[in-house]
Length: 102
Image (tube, rainbow, N blue to C red):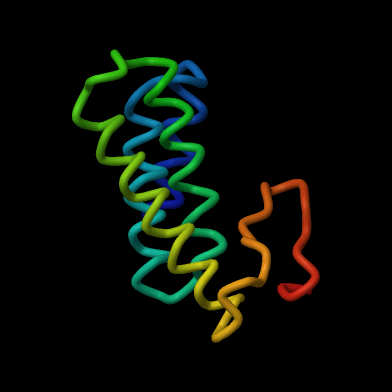
C-alpha cells in the first residue's frame, strides 16, 4: 500500500517534493520492522536527500531522517560485522554491492 502511494506521488509531484520523502521515510520504517535493513537504509537515505534539498537544514524532518539513517546504518553494520568490531562498515549505496550481502 505504501509503495503504491509512493508511485502515485512520484507521478504527480516534482522529484524533490517533501511528500515523496515522507512516503519513503514511512516505507523505510516498514522495512525496518520487517528486518530488511538494507532496504530500510536505502529508503531513509533517499528521504533524507529529498528533505535536505527541499527543507531548511534545521527542519525537524531533516533531523529525524538523519537520526534514522544513523540508527539504521548502525543496526545494518552490526548485523554484518557480528562480533568482529574491527570489520569494515558495510552500508553500500544502491548501485554498489556488499560481499557479505551477496
